[in-house]
Amino acid sequence: MCFFFKEDVYIGYSLVELAKVRQALHNEGIKYSYNVVDHSGQWRGRGTIRGNSGSAGMNMNYSKQYTVSVKRKDFEQARYLVQRALHS
Image (tube, rainbow, N blue to C red; front, side, top):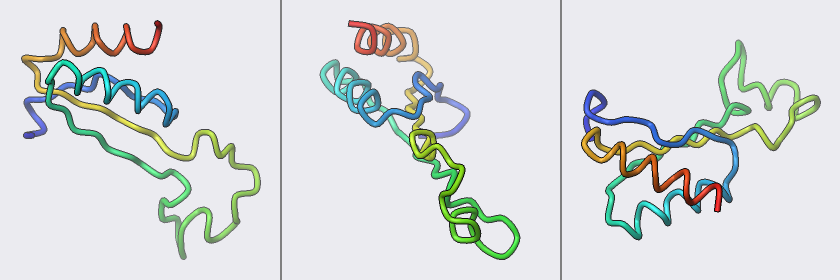
């Protein structure tokens, strides 16, 4: 999927919510892509944050950020499905 033609329908830190979003989009046949950013694995100076200082002081519930994107033409329907999946 080209970067310019997609929209983010979910950005969050919950793996459970990510699974609900993906299942809702899959059930309706909407193609999507997702990305995971591991904030504890980011490079700072001479190594990763976690490698330099361990996980002390880090809230591990927020160490990974999940983003789900869909084609721009599917955005409105996908946004509705995501809201329904997360708030039902």
